[in-house]
Length: 195
Image (cartoon, rainbow, N blue to C red; front, side, top):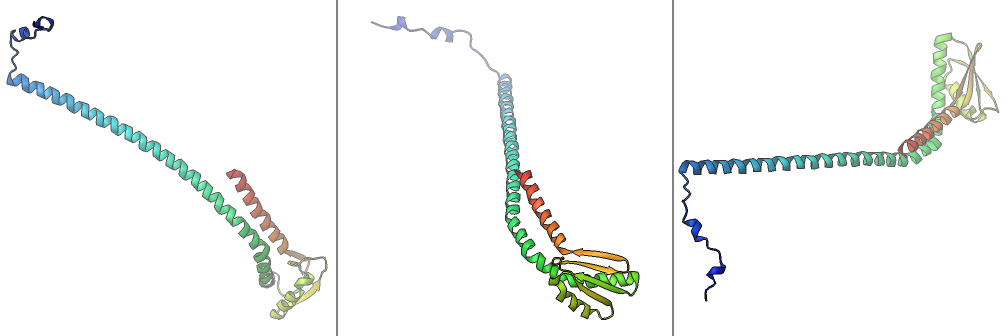
């Protein structure tokens, strides 16, 4: 017994009119297929490039953000490490340096005053701790008439220069205090800005 009656017969369709393809229509079909494939490839490449561009832009934006954040962190870390150093310099180096430069600065000031006001007697009122330094200064300037006077209420680095009716105050302690306050204020402002 055969089962051919259960299966579909495809032989009848082959018996119809044959489809003919000429060389020209075949070439046109190939060209159309090539154009479709080329366009699809071009669209895929453009889409891929646009996606790559978005990824690169997103990565660049993230890297710039990370770099900015890292710069701020590095800046904060550098400032934090400099703070103790500057405090030590203000506490140890600047007072010594200011004391060593007091006499040369005063000598320069005296010479300026002689040029401006002529030769006259200068009175230097100084702290007890600076008296020796001022005595050495007066010996180094024998061409000037300098009278020294000690004032117990003055702190080291404070003195008055008097000539005629004029009095000038030199206060290295106040200058050092102002420097210390400026440095502390600077670090406080940066701490607030970074936080």
